Amino acid sequence: MDIQRAKPDSVVDISEKGRSQDGSVISLNRRLYMQFQAFGGAHASEDFVNGLAEAGVQGVLYEDLNDPHGLGLLTFSENPEYFLSQIRPLLKAQPFAGLQLKPEFTMFGRTYAIGYEDDLERVLISRPIERVTDPTLPWAVWYPLRRSGAFEQLSPDEQRKILMEHGGIGRAYGNADLAYDIRLASFGLDKYDNDFVIGLLGHELYPLSAIVERMRKTKQTSQYLTKLGPFFVGKAVWQSRAAAA
Image 1: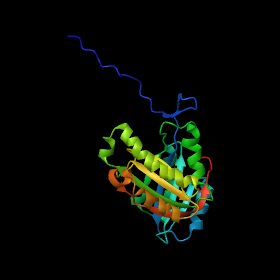
Image 2: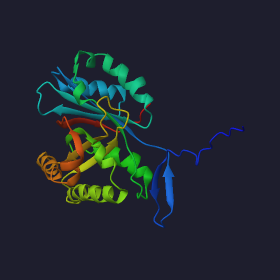
Image 3: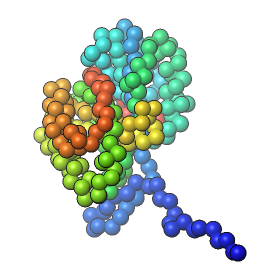
Image 4: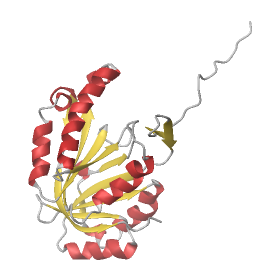
């Protein structure tokens, strides 16, 4: 009996997909990774600002609204090795070594395309960096979320309608210059099995709270989320777009 090996139907393509203005599919195999970590035990934020600046880190340092000794650190790079070769040694040295990590707030994710974007490099790389380092958007709320398995069983059309409702609220707040979002996929990258990391950025804090409240009424949040949070609330005291090593 002759046994033939099964042949794959197609080559696996892991690039991000978009669509040009003439309707043709475009792709880009690049994405930005972002890591958020929170710490306690900080006494003078200036010490940590100086350490980050001297190390040439690209990222954002937040003071924790809910912890007088708390800090939040967001770092980003296209190369995941950066977090091991540059950020890890930095956090093991003074003054960061004296801080207490709050692991419940640790988040890691990657930018992704939905499929209709006509400028993938801007969507995946430059715009997220511009937003998190915008000095006019110092307030931030960062949190993870996980969808229920029931959502994944819905038809593509049903999923699209649910996501359009959710996304429409975000666009309305952005068009009104009230709040802007960062959306990161964290499938297989999160110890708690979260699906996404969300960052809400704004000139003031209230609109960020208001958009979370408004989202609670959407079909996605009210019926198809199994986990939301914990929420880190902070204000940026240092931002840098310095090139990563």
